[in-house]
Length: 181
Image (tube, rainbow, N blue to C red; front, side, top):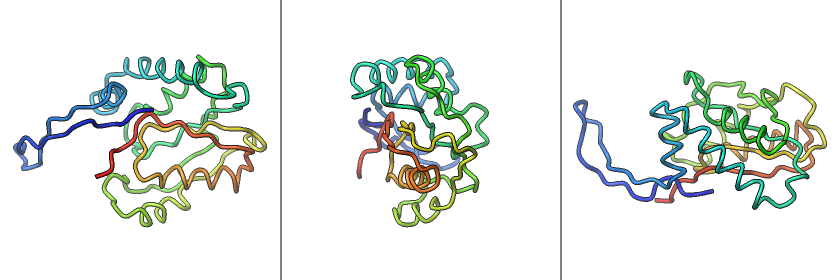
């Protein structure tokens, strides 16, 4: 839907020597940052309203979608899973079934933001996901995620959805994407 970061300037280092930045994000990128890293849960509703409006007004053949499938979280220690919550609100708002728990991450993987090599990312994820249900068979699903980096996660999940779930069609909606360096 939009780029994540518009501009980022190195401003120095914190007391532990880690670099600090002054970052300007897109409106949805800022809302997502506040939701995920500042625990501002009200941002989930704000983001979901934007997504729902987009899906209802600009998504071709909305009525052809059978399920919204949220990408399983990579950080299972987070007490609140933003993608799941936003997907739930969107599903309720637009009247599409939420496929909660049908697709799960079966293997713990490192956070991909720390791995630059695309082939390595895909290799890590190639057997990381599994299905808990057969109800997606023959359906048109909207795969939903918050951030697109290399696309390795989406590629791995799309393979699972086509090869193991036998879905008819996968469409993808991602809130933000990373700028290429």
